[in-house]
Image 1 (tube, rainbow, N blue to C red):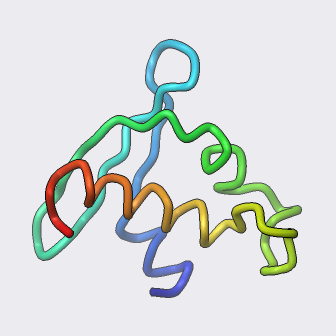
Image 2: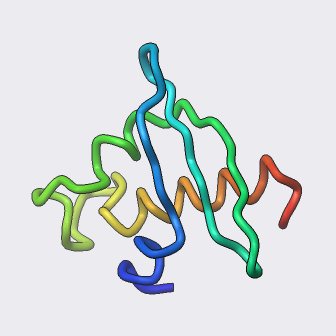
Length: 79
């Protein structure tokens, strides 16, 4: 999946409290929600310093969206 496709399918918002994020994904014509504590992926979502793929093993923008997408699928039993 491309970065633009992931941006269309994944919505992440900060919940009240520290290190808590609400993730909504669009998968197979339905919306699913979960809660995540992945603060590294949150930090990388729209950070211009992580747009390319040369980040020494850390998340890129695409990797951050993919991490939230995969986590929400797993928590909803969609794998």
